[in-house]
Length: 168
Image (cartoon, rainbow, N blue to C red; front, side, top):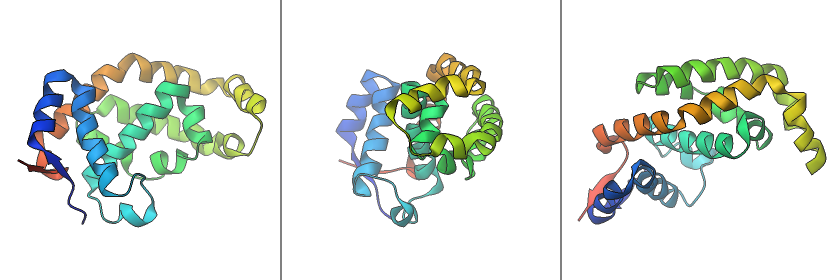
C-alpha cells in the first residue's frame, strides 16, 4: 500500500476554507502519491476508501462539467458503473447518490457503447440531444452536489486514517 501523507498545516488551512478545499487536500495528496493519475497498476496500492474518493472526484468533475454523457464519453463509465463505487457511497451514507448511480448504470449499459465511440466535436455535442435520458440525472447531481460533497467531506473527516497519514 502507498502511504499517502498530508501536512497538518495544510489540512488546518483547508479546514478553514471550505469542504472543497478540505477534500482537495486528500485528493491531491492521493494523486501525488500515485504519480498524478489513477490506473490499474497503482489502484492496487490504494485502499477502497482512497479509490472511492478519487472516483467521487472524477464523477464530480465530469458531471459538473458536462454531465453523465461526458463522463461516459471520456471513458469513465466502466470505472464508475462496473465497480462497487455506488455500494461504497451507500455505506458512506450517501444513499440518494448511490440510488441515482444505480439508475444511471442502467442507461450506461444501454447506451455506453454508442456514447464512447470516436467522433468529432460536433457529433459529441449532438450526443447531449441524442441521449436526453441522462438530463434529469445531470440536473439531480447538480442540485445535490453541495450536499453530497459535504457528506463525502464529513465521511473523510470522520475516517481520516483510511485516507492519509498526517505529518507535522
